[in-house]
Image 1 (cartoon, one colour):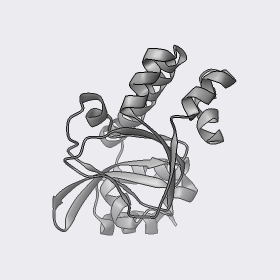
Image 2 (cartoon, rainbow, N blue to C red; image 1 turned 135 degrees about the vertical axis):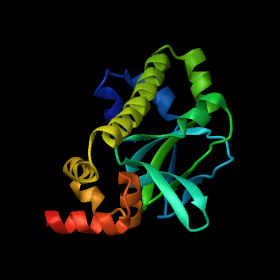
Image 3 (cartoon, rainbow, N blue to C red; image 1 turned 90 degrees about the vertical axis):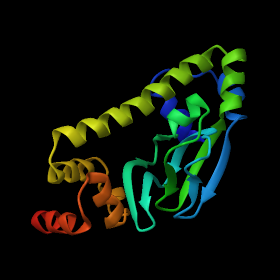
Image 4 (tube, rainbow, N blue to C red; image 1 turned 180 degrees about the vertical axis):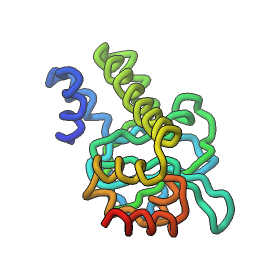
Length: 189
């Protein structure tokens, strides 16, 4: 839970009493790899902070084809945010890639905090901004860079963690086949 507070406090300090109220709403989960956090058709009810591990968002195109469109790492927020905001079923899935520890709070808890704790509005804004920035960075990367550059940028940002992502998920995330990613990796190493 300390990592989550540190995450918020890089934006603004949180008084101990405010953190105590907020932290009572948090639940901790330890999940094995390949745990489904949200399945297409379910409504997202939680915003989570990844203390440890990696999560992917993916669309299942057929029984044997999935497209990974987001990868979220430790010390980042994770949420199927469109479903969370609209209270409508998600159109994609969320799954752990590695053993993962998350701290989460629910939609209802967030609404209650908004109504009773003024600082929670700032926390909510930070959550929204961070989730938006992660999405915008991914979209810009897909439009601006070639596959090799996207791989190198991801490797530069998260070298240890990228090594833990199965090749097929990483290739899908970058927008290429696993074979093309293997060729890129051979050129680099």
